[in-house]
Amino acid sequence: MEESDNIHNLPAERAAEAAFENEIAKDTKLFLNSLEKTKVEKPRRRTLYLVGLAASVLILMASLITINISHSDSAIAANYNINQMVSRTGENVNDSKFTDAVRSYYEKDYTRAQSLLEEAESSDERVNNYKEWLSLLIALRTSGSNSDTFTSQLEQILSNEDHVFYSQAENMNQDLKLFWRTMVIRK
Image 1 (tube, helix red, strand yellow):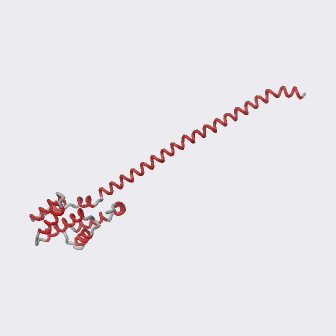
Image 2 (image 1 turned 45 degrees about the vertical axis):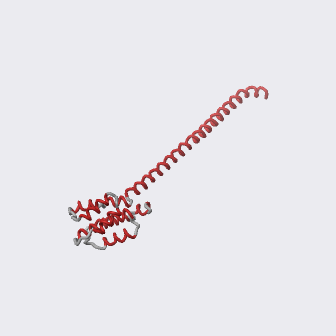
């Protein structure tokens, strides 16, 4: 009876083994497919991470360049130019040496502009205020905001609340002390 039972069980065993092997094959295929998906996803994640990192670095560099350009000593001096101040107050200064000094300043001949300012003599307090302001701008352009010359001239204007350029000097001083400027711009 064992042989006859064995004969009938043989196809059933084969069918069970085939089904079992089929399940193993399916599971193996699913496992291998999941491995391939993780291999594909990791490079995508890495690529996205690297692209994001590169974009962040570019944005940081662009920001630093923009801050450096827009808050440099030259940019601040250009923002507080003497002609802009004269046109805002509506006043004209009638002094040929001073006018020549302003012209030299705009021609970027700062040495000549400073010597013309020193030659210009006036008893008019307003003209003297304009001379001090132009001298401050020349010092900012030539020596920079960290120089003793510039600092002492700025402090001199800030010590006199009646100075024509007192409010501009306050604004300039605030611009010079901006957080990003002190962190980024080194002279």
